[in-house]
Image (tube, rainbow, N blue to C red; front, side, top):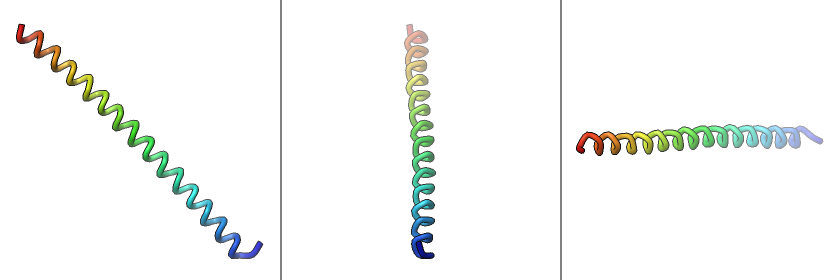
Length: 56
């Protein structure tokens, strides 16, 4: 195991860590997007109910 092998292993570890970080960030962003869309959906339904009740 020479110095070159060690460097390759270190690079692979950093690549794996970077990959994990990106995956976590994507997961968090997707979760936030989904919750935002759900909130938007609930808001639209609420607005429609209010408009219907108000117009009767």
